[in-house]
Length: 169
Figure: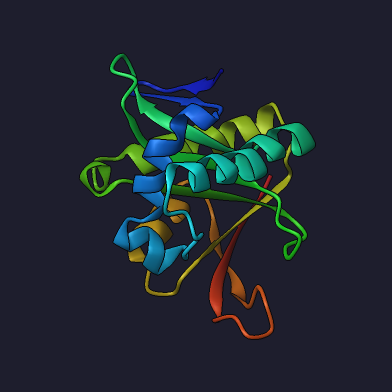
């Protein structure tokens, strides 16, 4: 189901049919480095990830990570949307794109549309984002959509320190 459209992109809900793309994206070296290893190696792993992650989030919260596709071609290029983590009090925005679709403005386009949707449709007042300190590209996109550095945090006691950015409506 389409959730959002931009000039060049569609953002839609994920389904188990997107498993092949999810295997590719979640095993990309930048995804592994900056977001982490989700342990998704097979099509079946990806189906479970989609069912227990994005699809469960749609049911539980009314939002989640959406599949980003090129308009017209329906080619999946990334994911973008909102997460509600137990470790954060606020909803956070996240995105990831395959290497060949980075540095083309797609992340900004998708994240800006998602943020607008979050404010106007979901009624989100405060949205946060987390990123590694050395993830310059993601930080730039987050700042471009109106977020600013809040503080350094750890998502777990033994986890690395990461940047928390925030935007208040």
